Image 1 (cartoon, rainbow, N blue to C red):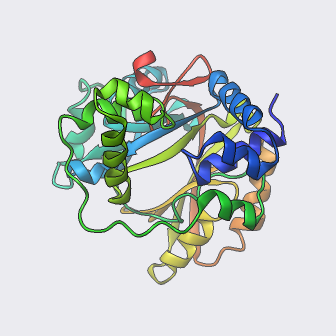
Image 2 (cartoon, rainbow, N blue to C red):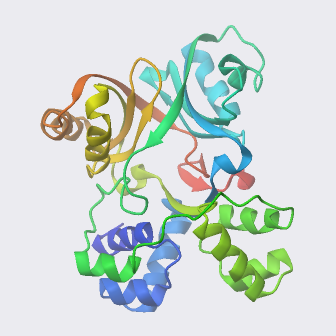
Length: 331
């Protein structure tokens, strides 16, 4: 059973995914051993994973949001096949089992219709397909994202964890080499892997690993995120909002929505609706309150539509298997 200490650990990891347990414990008021033990329990339960992610732009790829309307009896097999693709993330079944929503990494010049269908056999199960470009994510890295689970920290605690604001990435993203493969694979499995562990899997010295990590991180090529399974934290309603916002309000409205505790992600997209937002709540009543209070008072939103997710299959870098987050290689 999770409690406020667990939630504060999640908050701390969101701000500083690779922070030492000694610092995390000191900041939130528990021992280093307690912080480490609680983290390991959350990880073993499948409720969370810290993962290392490579910016898709390194490979010349953009991110596309796909909505696939299909026969309800064929949605699950199609979604399972999509979730196993390394170039596809955030796979879920929505709208009573008749819609699959996912994010595809693919070059800008790729024909949209081919992005998905070339990965799967053409099937009469697919009734309609729309793919829109994710133009821009809103929010500040490390501070945006879903925080509705509680565990609030003071401004002083957040400052101690995050330290000085990181410098903006300088220059272009770094090209990856063959030697980076084992390093990035290890971080995709465990974003908190120690330098000692990374040296073991790469066959390099700890110093060389540390220098390469610093270069990848400061350039923006490598970042860290926390995959969460909200259901294990008591939050059972997950919805995608498709918003229409006037261009003059787009930047302000997008950032304001991204700052809502209930919101896990907000981004500007192409297409009929130009903003998508992922909202996580405990239940339908809490979601209704969000729509009629926080969203209702956000300026710039003209209209919106809702897709209620009924089954989650994949997060950024984790599959959901038997109600737990697991590395893709484990399935």
